[in-house]
Image 1 (cartoon, rainbow, N blue to C red):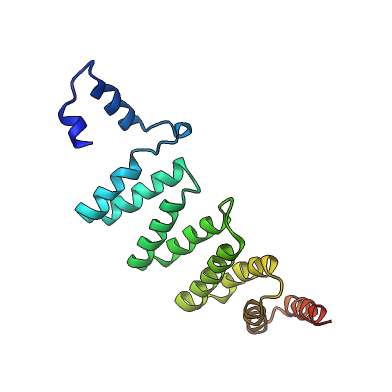
Image 2: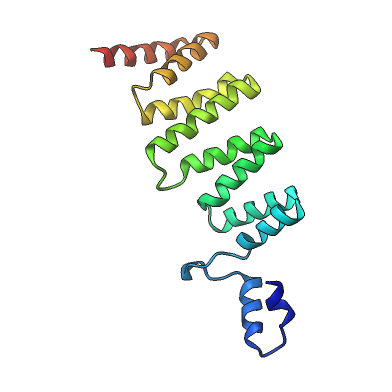
Length: 171
């Protein structure tokens, strides 16, 4: 980019390249927006965490299921201890189209773990655990965690339903 900008002058081919770069390449041509390249400069050379996060979020605005941006943003949030943001981005990743079942299950398990271990918020862990059970009905670990949470929260109806489903699977 710096090389293109240094040779930039009106009516040159660099003019077209710089204009396309600044506006972002057409996504349907298989190109990525300029933020994909710019984020490396913020991350690797300048160490500007806020700009890295903002740039990844801009990428996700343009391409909501961009796996690289989702993974990198999750890693950055974890490094910075931004647990709520990490949970949010992991949920986005789990909901991304084309996510493999095993990977989605791993992510949902991680989300539930973050809610219970980082925040002690068992109520928030229920949703990812129930999603995990919908994905993998026989998951013993998820069943056990939900039984404990339902019991602690005195959610007797949910506990009875879960025990009924567990008993039905044993038959």
